[in-house]
Amino acid sequence: MRLFVALLVLVSWVNASNLLTYNVYERSDRVDVMLSFDAPHEGSISQKNDATSITLTINDLGYDKMIEKSINSNIIQELTIIPEKNNTLKVVLKSDKKVSVVASKTVDGFGLRIRSSVMQAPTQSSSETVSSSLPTAPSSSVDLIDMRYIIVIAILLFLVIVMFWIKKRLAIQTIKPSNAAQKGGKSWLFNPKTGTQQEVTLLHKKQIDNQNSVVLFEYGTIKYLVMTGNSNVLLEKFQNGEVKDDTDFEKVFEENRRRLDDYLKLQDNKLSTYKNKASADYTPIDELR
Image (cartoon, rainbow, N blue to C red):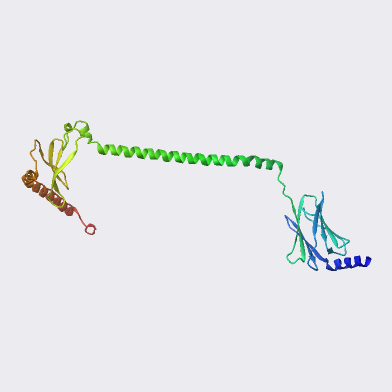
């Protein structure tokens, strides 16, 4: 039986890893302790925290001596490596602050990094401020967004109402007769006494040239003979059925044909005179230099 136990201890000692070297790397925000092994370490690691120290227990790791090292850091002040029986090694880190320790193996298992850093615990006042502000911040932001949407929608509705009002006003002004007729003034074409509800009826139309034509239409009880095109000219008014059909319209048109020709010639002469005067008044810029 004793021989069997001895064989088990020998096998576990042979399979266990051994600590070769250790190094300490000091930084302003952390302290790293690097352990190097002679074989990949497969044992377990446990941690125990006290008021002034953190103890890491590493199983299946052997070492032949005890190490005590002072560290000039505000995070860790002392490092102690204590070998124990059954291939167990304890790493003790002493500190006067609350320290967080994280142990992590290298990828190949030949090393172990023990990193120590100061715990950043929030104060009670800051935690109360955060807890009190968190519920109110979303509600205020949501209220502000809702108010902006309401203002934008109200402005859009107001603009739509204004546009409908302007459109209605323009439609009313288009349907109504001129201001002179509404105020009882004289109109060159329509007599206000005939009423504003009567419709204009087109009776006859005859083309004079490409731009002008003669139109006979009826408004109320009066028929109007008008030249339309480049200019609108009232030629005659007829009452009591003086112009009844196409024959009467042709007769009236021929009677006014000379007047129309004279009027169009006069307009052409005025246009030619204006063009000649404009070309005579024009002086090239090169001649002015």
